[in-house]
Amino acid sequence: MIRSFAVTENLQLIEGLPIEQLFADHIKWFWIDFESPTEDETALLKTHFQFHPLAIEDCLHLRQRPKLDYYEGYDFYVIHTLNQHTLLHEEVDIFVGEKFIVTFHLTPSPEITMVRQKLLASGFPYERGALHLFYQLMDKIVDEYFPAVYKIEDELSAIELENANQNLMNEVFKIRSQLLKLRRTIFPMRELLYRILNSERVIIPKDERMYFMDISDHLLKLSDMIESNREMTKDLRDSYISLNSDRMNNIMKTLTVITSIFIPLTFIASIYGMNFEFMPELSWHWAYFGVLGIMLLIGSFLIFVFWRMGWFK
Image: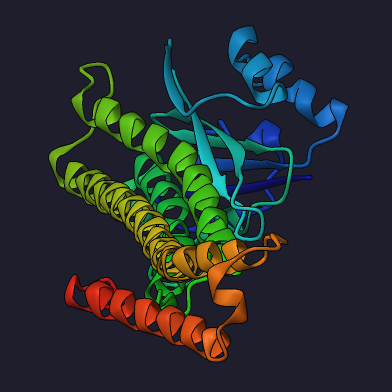
């Protein structure tokens, strides 16, 4: 599907103008949006717009990093939008010239739909031209990164280690995986904005530069949030491991105390379990109760010693 929007010299918006009429003298600038295009529609990139074959190839082959390529008369951008359900990036390719902007994406883009609705609404600054529309697209794409990051922050804030278990750790590792997906999208976009702002070949007027700097600030904030959340997941993981180690130490300490108490008792019982015929105490009337008393005395003494050593704390 191809959608066209043209702004005339007297700042009137025309929707659905045929591509052949977009380069007319009375057209100030225009926007063409290729959404899930057919082969014949895709061919227009070469036959009508005469874009460079390498740029067209990048449009058709996904998994490109966000980037900026310079061509004569226009700049070519690879931008990543964020799928809010999978947290994976989806590619949007943008050609930006002085009087035109062409967007190309193989899947529907909610961000582009929102910018299109904003363009059709009253109050859009048509006089700012194609570069400002490019800013609007970039700004909306970056703004849609925030809900996913905020959602992860809320999930991390709700995690408590008081009743930590394996399910909790599975949730932490799941969040950590989500943060990694976001990092793969946001960090390359941050590098792209840095390149746009510092490139000598991308001419951005002073009044427009402030807008792009605002996008760059948003990306820096998102990057800091992601790194902060990754550190939080690391701290939660380390705290969980420490708690488990402490619990295991307490269990082992308890078992060690019990074992230490029963070792001498077992020793005594094992002696009297030997079936020798001549054992002095066997004929003593109170021998059984005497041995039990000795065992009780030794056990109590060991418990007292371990308590004084702080093993029960």
